[in-house]
Length: 358
Picture 1 (cartoon, rainbow, N blue to C red):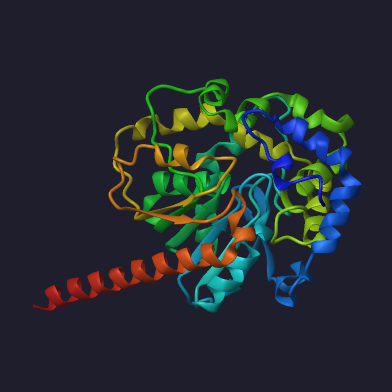
Picture 2: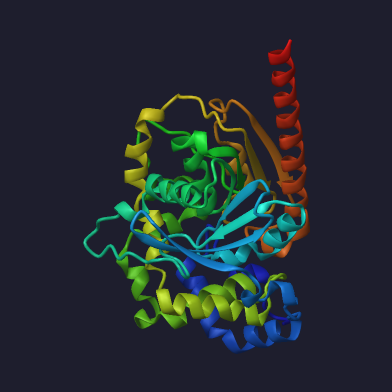
């Protein structure tokens, strides 16, 4: 593809999401030809059917999740963002299971094989972050897991951070990929204010309107074709077959559930008021994505971290979807943190047991 570059299909301060998606549809034959020519075969152990798919009814909703690895290993829960699925973690699932962990990758409520509650009347309660975190905790309970490492990317990182905030006793550690913990605040910043402060986050305001669900004549298939060609066709890491899995899933479910994550901001603010200035007690890792065009590094690094009892910060080279485009670097950062964290934890337990014997 000689006349179109990756930057033509990125949302920015000057290019709105809808304009980007319209350009994708306008240039679709060229984009799809490029993707086909540059796709690599799916490794057998990355085929959707190669994973162990399960379902559980969690607080009244059916959740789809994938579980791999040692049933006796340290549990790790992987939570995807928007507009993603459990499958975005395929590289990390295979890596972490080889390291001996018990890996659980969920489809968030409103996505993929999980239930998709509709909120036509504006009742966004199913999508408030506290409830989504409570669903994760209930799934752990059903799986007889006392504590887990919770890892999230994009909106999944927000849910991971909220799980540590609301249910710290169920978390070994929290890892946020690309998205920081936004400390509870006394004043509410509405999406329009956020979009004015950080133009790259203009979609926060855009998604408040139901108009987005009627883009492209309300056709979810065309919407999905636009989204996933914009995300995957020109970047490395996701081939044509894998892209089609996303298109098929979102053609079936629509993007309604994902948009509701953005619409529940005031509910999240209200839920977090009791935590203003309270310590964030779960040991945590924030991974900054250095070339993220959606959530700029400068914005991530500007967030206040004063309430953390234990926070490490690391960096990976790549753009927003780095766990697909540069999985080796993400896996390396995960492994380094987890190895060091559980080594320190084991040492602390041994020290406490020695003191108890003395």
